[in-house]
Length: 515
Image (cartoon, rainbow, N blue to C red; front, side):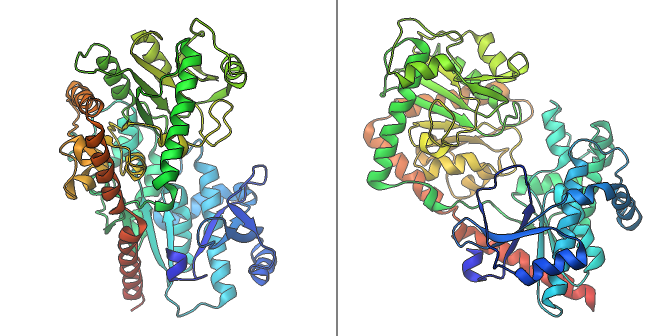
């Protein structure tokens, strides 16, 4: 979309991960060759230039940030002296992130100087605290540029919820700086806060995160930028039917091999997915919901729930892989018949612990299967991408406690799969604003979630799934149509206007600063 409206006036900058493949980057020695030489000779920057292998193929630059890492202490002092960023208690990924961000700032300045862009309207966009020092670098060295800082979640908010503390009931009275110190994230918080303050346009992805930013960062966002969906990712028509049938067959066979039962492609398939944030993503709610279905007499169909959440995976199960590759069947369940890949941290995996504790039986009509790997099409068991397997589901559940936007339910309805989410997800609030959310019939069920109503969320999620499982084929067909209709309102063609307005906002602020 941006490349169409601004052909080759968009430059994406990323890290040059020399030891890792970067398949979405296509090197092009002819692209901006003069700048590459100038950046190396004048700025001591090592750049790889080319195109980003996505629709539109925009220009991209990969910068080697590692030479900057030895200068980090000097950079921290510069940022403290100029902007008050406190890096004293930094640890973990802070140093590497800041080295990359600072390299991005230098890359932007080198491009600006090489192209002699004085007087042109330019917006430099930085995402998350990890790019904060890039924004502050540009603010100091190129004050004529408009800057935009986008946070998809606050460091303190994510830490509060991830540590089991109540976020929403305490938000208005919460001191973000003090809480950052308590949770030992004060360096990241300090950088994030100053980036928000210094940016010409500070944006986030939803109104629920805007409120979080206002209280925890002390800065009300200037714009909300909801995440759009690329419609070409979702199959339709006969391609959809074919992919759905194929996915269901693959999933059913894997379940049968694990449990020593017959493959059942008519079972009710439910999935949850996303990052492995046990509480934040509502993975605890999902597992408890499936457990409640085991004893609910209203559910009349065999059901399989899939937890498609990447963990620290060691390898695909050799016993399961053998049965699948050889189309063999054994009459009894495999050891641990609820997991498809072995993990390195089985004893500390909260998902695995929860499933074990509830003692799901492989012969029950309601079963659960944990797929703890990245579904990139080469996992060793399914060998299909997440999107390909998603097409085979009947429902998805994302009962998030902390979810600034919520791309997973958005992807689900784009594939015609009805989803359950909550009012603590930005996408859930957006769906409600579009008239959906009251029931699963609308394509999305949005459940009110607070700090204190865990059991009600489990109960309402279960009821929505039972309603869907018991629906007629005609009702299901109508629901899938509503899913796609709602998803069509959340594409980039609809949401890009929010970005354009934010760009204009940033440019106007920068112009005022120069007066």
